[in-house]
Amino acid sequence: MTLLLFILLGMYSCQEVITVNLNSVSAKVVVEGNINNAPGPYTIKLTNTTNYFDPSSVSYLSGASVTIADNAGHSETLQESSPGNYVTSTLVGTIGRTYYLTIVANGQTYTASSIMADTVRIDSMSYALRLPRPGSTAPPSYSLTCSYTDPASTINYYGFRLWRNGLIINNIVDNRVESDKLFNGTAQQVRIRNTELIAGDSVRVDLIAFDKNAYDYYNTLKATLNAGGPFSAPPANPVSNISNNGVGYFGAFAITHRSMLLQ
Image 1: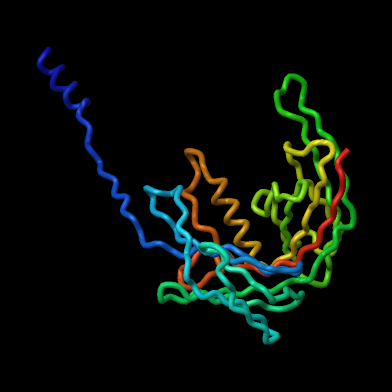
Image 2: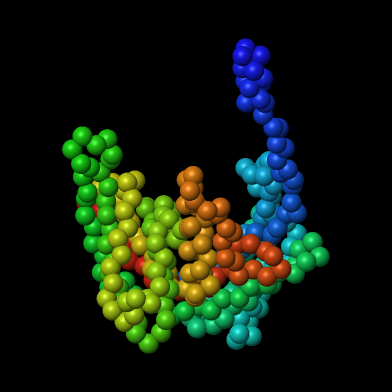
């Protein structure tokens, strides 16, 4: 009996050693940038993806040829102002035009295009101070409410961005993105909350109209960033409009904004 017990314990204590192969993969070009209806310059940022064992480092892509053209015959080759950052000097974003990005780097060509939609005005903006529940250690937070009217004649897609004292503190991916599929042609309200806001802050909200490609990109990017938990599906790469297996997004944004002082 004792011998049998030792044999069984030995069987259950044995563990199979599994080797997980985490090979490095070829780097992909990452594109980040947009052209919009505000005065330039506009910046296109180029980097390379990093491998699993070194995700914290940023590999800037220098020496690329970057060109933006529109369907009205205007074209400009961007200048590299710092490693991986390419800026315009004369190009002007114009509502209704289609913009074409061409990147040539390391013998490969990457392209993308985006249509600049019409602007949608913010009708009004208000704020409210929200106090934490009794016993909570959370700080008070300001909640901003923006009202706008969706045009009935077109299909529209929106993103929102929050500024505090001249600096962006909530970008598009931090807020919800919207399609007017369920509210076409009606008045809408969007609420933006941030615990960093305090009395005396000057705040600005951007209402950004963009095309469906941008809407799909930011929706899938948010899903990727929020993925997690033991029962979650593995995150997928965000939808990209960059050709040749590039990642990231190039967009044409139509921006309106409204500002106010918190008291």
